[in-house]
Length: 297
Image (cartoon, rainbow, N blue to C red):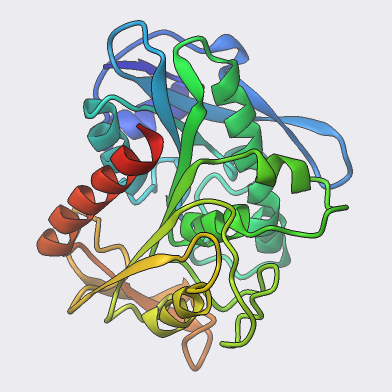
């Protein structure tokens, strides 16, 4: 496996989480994306790839609210290792560090939290897709996207079609070939899905949701409704709800409740439980790899 470190500090943080390898920096260490005011900005990105010339299918991994710095949950790195070992190129854009949130936004309720919300990160995801397609070792027709929690919510937004006049409308139609959303928030309005159980979620490509039934940060019930609403669409959403699993079931860390986490689903707006579930983690690896094998190979 070859790992191209987009920034030395970011690369070291991921290595600390167990992402092994190497050594060469991508040009400028960033990808170009677009700020809300239309200005071009550059965000750090890590690219990991299998050995060999390719071209390989690729997956863009969107990090959770902890970001990709020293305080990262480590989940993006775990998924990267699994996917690269199976022959995928992985791109991990850092949507937080250069925008004033190097430590993430899990406990940050300030107004600036909204400046790095899913709506803005959708643009980063499509910038990563464009960058992936520019790489000679990537098959640009076979690029997927996945993310957990904050990144899972962003994934749902990435895959939801908007009006024809929306700036990313063309990119969405010719964009990601498949997506996986891990424990996303499903109460946001996305396209014709209203977020309150009404309307219809219409994915632009195959989409798989994996979530735990004990998730108190992004509850499973709204995601079950979102998937149900999509049954008659071109791409019905697949969903798996893991019994007994909490938020971040793919973590290698013990279950714990943190009272300071920002949580719109908690009565006081704070407090959430996270922690790994070995059985759910093992099953999710199987399901994600089988899903991408079917949709990206």
